[in-house]
Amino acid sequence: MPEVQLVAHTIRSHGVAVARLHVHDWLILVLLVVVDLILNFIEPFHRFVGEGMMVDLKYPLKGNTVPFWAVPIIGILLPFIVILIYYFIRRDVYDLHQAVLGLLYSVGVTAVITDAIKDGVGRPRPDFFWRCFPDGKGVFDPVTRKVLCTGIKSVIKEGHKSFPSGHTSWSFAGLGFLAWYLSGKIRAFDHRGHVAKLCIAFLPILLAALVGVSRVDDYWHHWQDVFAGGLLGMTIASFCYLQFFPPPYDVDGWGPHAYFQTLRESQNGIQSSTTNVNSLNVLQSELTSACMRPQHGLGISEIGTGDSSPMLDALENGRRIEILN
Image 1: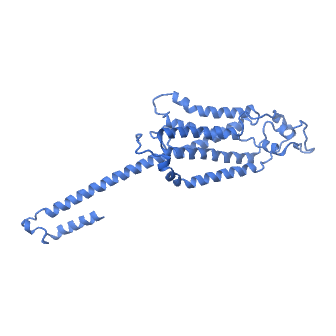
Image 2 (image 1 turned 30 degrees about the vertical axis):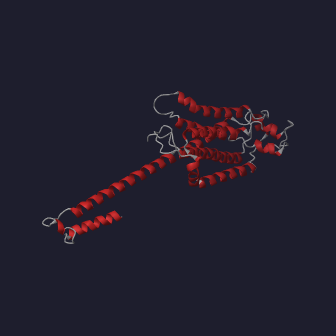
Image 3 (image 1 turned 135 degrees about the horizontal axis):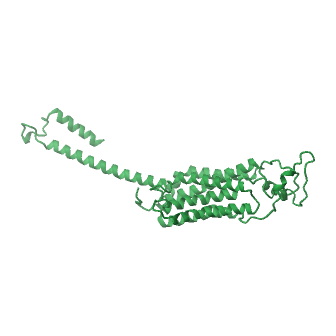
């Protein structure tokens, strides 16, 4: 379908109507936020950690290269700014609404799944020894040799949330969605061989990957945690994007499904109205012609006096019914 826009669909003109169509989606999104908050308060599963296992869990306890507060900025605010810029260029509230809703669902669903798995698996982080024994003196059960942590409870709790990486999954969920979005807008797969477009589409993926690498460098996650987080975030982002937009390689990949649906409905309405008007004109013309046409063997003065044939009367009555319908 060619890129044709009938009118500008702005926030002021169509924003309320579009939001009302998706009010239940926004309510479910709020529910996802509540569920994720609850998951963060739940005590994760404390997987058995023995004295011999501490060999691989003695990495130093460091700070975060990418702080926790920076993750929403990278995974949500940055893509939102790009989406907002495109709105001011095209003035299409359908694109703005569907993109923002898809982005938030991508991050929201990813967050819930990530935190649920974290609580269920309870894998210790690479720096678990120093979280468990901040003074460096290990204490173990005399029989099972299980660790008997002496550290701060909240720090120990966080130490059981290694798999999968939340920083990585959030980043790939938001920036992965942005990569899909940019691919569609710049028509990266238009079969013209402009490889430079792929560089633009891959930039968000690179940024998300660097966030994941930082988690391994900071000894907060094992490489498997980062790999699983990236795969999870990218998968959810793909599902959420394709829920609202055609694939980027599609001829209509530059716009959301809702825009093209509205365009089709407008065109169908115009065509239907035109067809009805034309049909009415044809029927009226035929009726006028039939009423004014002289009958064989009758004078003009005899037409319309009620002496016409029953078949003609039935035909005229049928046409009148069609016109009224």
